[in-house]
Length: 356
Image: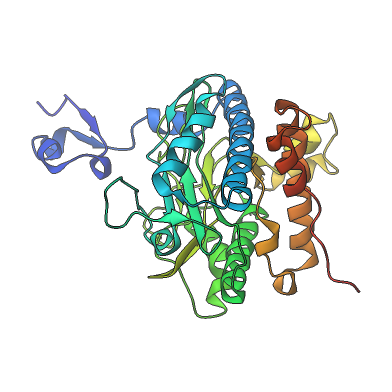
């Protein structure tokens, strides 16, 4: 009976299911719930923001512990211990349920394995000391939101090559973060801004730049994304959350990735929120809306790994403004004079500029 219809998104269904539905009965379209989940409502978005603030507090406690273990105690720390201790600090935060995905903690060459996972007894297991960097990609599931963050740390003296690549990855992160773009822009259009700085020296990375994130749901959630795969033409919309995670991987040596989660907001939303009228209301109605990103992740970026000679003043201003925002939001959750607070204060200080 061709009057009976089955609504199924073939692009998201397996062959065994899709093959049993006659073409005459098939309504091949995106599930109606998908865009509802992708575009967060006010309550979901507020929960996501709060989740990232408490996640920032957990990371401050963890990094204070890690620096003390490596620099003060002078010991080495296994990738497994890094995972366990970081998860422990997240578990102390209100509303924590579980990690949002298995932690990736890759020391040295293991950081170049994009989906690496440390395990006791593994031949690949490494220990962090002052001679190697560590890439930590981790996140938490809280009752009110989901986090996913990557930071690359080096607690010793990094090489000039490492600092250059770290800086270029950071420039790519800033390039996406600061974009203003018209509504209905597909994510692949923005991918080039993440890669521009490393493309300039004929380098690249082999994964997408961003994926959607659910609100207290899946840490990898569609339908949108930012990647060079232009086949995903899903447009970016207000209320979506995406990761921004450019990287660089030198096989056998190290990996670098800097990941923040971002929410998509209207450019004119700031004026509206303050009760201000658009400068030209008729022009606003007749022209399309423009969107931008607002930061969710509230975790500092290691400043002494940055080669300021290849950073612009605008990029350095971005970094200082980001750290100011991080400190303002995370510091109220930390005890004055505690190791975590001391680490946050130091990490959020303005970066030293070139003398003019």
